[in-house]
Image (cartoon, rainbow, N blue to C red):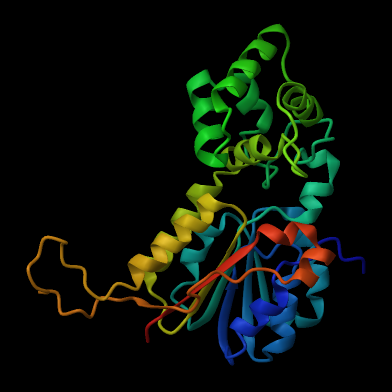
Length: 305
């Protein structure tokens, strides 16, 4: 079968979980099954629970992982909600690849592409909020907020102003039109298309991506799955910062307030240990084969037994 998506850091993921000999593994973003397939091949006794909110991706994974069907359970839904149903199991690992798949980006009818004739960007096509709603109905302050906070767009005020003026004459109908509006007003910087960051901001808003990641971390913090490794792959600085800071918090042995003269908490409060002092990134070879992997960063935490 034709494989439409190359999973990033596949070999590194397999290496991180090479000691996962048995038990359950949760692939929070199973997508097109690339990571799960590699893990099932490498770890003969694990059972994988694959979660995704994209029914099209799940259907593909059902076919791709068919030979492992006795060891695979595929579940549709938001990973931040669904994971709570499985955190009580004997887990050896949890993986979350927080990114849009190549197929979602390339399928023009999904609305993620600069050339798309629609304004959609929903990972779950049954969700109500679309990119059309964001660009045509959000107030100026809200537009400024998402462009500034979700993509650190330097010209966020000017961009919001241009959107307001454009839609006052007629609605912004397509992703192609939105990309053209941005290109007309903002110059290209190096190899990066000027619409890249604004598109990222709208996509994050439509899919509540930062909220999903926070709720995933909250669920893992509450459950503290004994001995399990948690690996999270992010693609931009906001997500990476969130993961980095949460892992640092979890690894703290002393939780006394800074003003305390001496430790009174017993210095035994760490939930586990950080296994990656620096994030794992793609090799030059992988970046050449899959340019979208260049921004991927993976951080790994192991919960104490």
